[in-house]
Image (cartoon, rainbow, N blue to C red; front, side, top):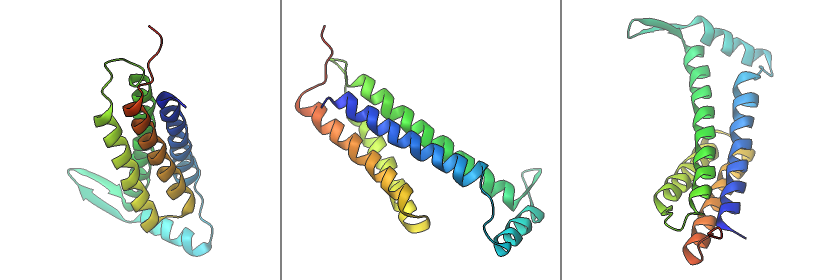
Length: 146
C-alpha cells in the first residue's frame, strides 16, 4: 500500500471523528435527562464578564466544542496534505507527520480521560495510519511516475 493512501485513509477517519464530534457532540446535542437539562439551563443563565464582553458559561462550553471540531477538521486536512506531499520526490514529510501523530495521540489521551470509546478508537486509528504511512514513506517513497 502507498503512503499517500494510508494518509488519505487517516484523513477520512479524522473527518469522521470531526463530524461526529461537531454534529453529534455540539450542534445537535440534546440533554438526555431532566438533571442534564437543569445543568444546561444553569450554564446558560450564569454569565461572566471577560475583556469587555459578557458570555454565559454555556457560550464558553459550546464555543470550545466548536473550536475542537474545527481543530479536528484541520488535523484531517493536514493528514490529507501530507499524503499529497508524500508523492513528491523532494517531499520531506516527517515534521508534519510528527505533528499529526502527536495531535492524535494527545486527543486520544484526552478522550480516554474525559469521553468514551468511539473518539478514542478514531483518534488512535488516525495516529496509527499516519505513523504507518510515514514509516512506509521512509522505506520506499510513494512517488508518482515522472
